[in-house]
Amino acid sequence: MNKRPTIADVAKAAGVSTGTVSNFLNETRPIKPATAERIENAIRSLTYRPSAFARALPLRAARHVEKSDDLPRLLVVGHICVDYLCRIPVLPHRDDRVSADVIEKAMGGPGANLAVAAAGLGEPYGLNVNLATAAGDDADSEWALNCLNRCGVDTIPLRKPKANRLPKAMVMIEANGSRTIVAETFELTEIDLSGKIDIEAPEHPSCLHIEGFQYENMRSSIDMFREAGWRISLHGAGLPAKARTPEAFARLLERIDMTFVNDETVRAIFSINAPLAAMIDEFARVLSRIKQRGDVVLTLGPFGAVVFPRKAMSYIEVPALAVEPIDVTGAGDAFAGIFLNLWLHGETLDQAARYATIGASLSTTAVGAQARVSSASEIQALLPSLSLKPTRAVS
Image (cartoon, rainbow, N blue to C red):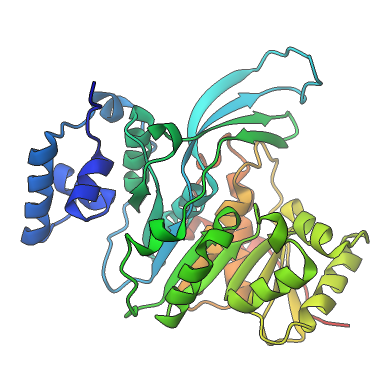
């Protein structure tokens, strides 16, 4: 039996994003006549009918941000997944059987988490956010694409995932807020991206963001986007083994304009076993020997972040906001999304880091990676409670 066509199929047939199709169907934004005609033709040829199931699923209220061609653009290459959130007192041992306080379904995936956080800031940091990803024909895919559109993220379905459905993840959340994740995943390919997206010189600040999982498969695309005038950013989580050596990581930093990496990854790559302060100093010395690198942000979880500007012989430490964490899932994604938004708007690196640490901290106060999205006004009100440490020179 043929599967019912989805909004992603309509978008692919019409050559537009799923957000454009959703705006056309819901009449939420004006659509150019030629674009509307392509969508109508795709709907007719596919005999598309919106899913009642997808419409009925509860969607979190989103902040409305007017999209404009005059706004900066963030194109995220990453994946969406369905998270099953299991709240348990403590992680079980092998062969144990435990009862969860609750098991909830939520949207996740590093790329989706980052895109939602970036789009969620709202005025004065309006941003055109696209998520290039894989989406299937299942109800979960249509649900997720509708959720993303309501959050201000336009999706660009590049292909269908394995088994033609969204990947799933089990997220086990302990009482102290720590989490353990078992996830299905996928990798996009060079053909997926370069064959579906026109790479043109941008009129406004634009950034291509790559998940670490996708780095090796996207190296040629990175070069093409850079040559066209795009900035490139990368999240170090999920980097393949061959990129996690000192030499390979140094070459990566030379090709990427903005790299986010956590302390565990840095310790593993450079074999640093020192306490936190000494580890930061050692990493600063490592970076000082890479002459043509981009900016680097070291994330430290509840201890905040450290910014290493590309040409400066000093670094900036930014503390986290003091909160009682409930679930730390996606906090690093939220940090990167907020940081990239302000960076594209021309804010200083220390200002971007202050906004990002506050937003990431707040994201840990609810269950689910996208359950607590911060607005710019909310973060701005909390800025006085966050003091920057003095800039430290590389010793």
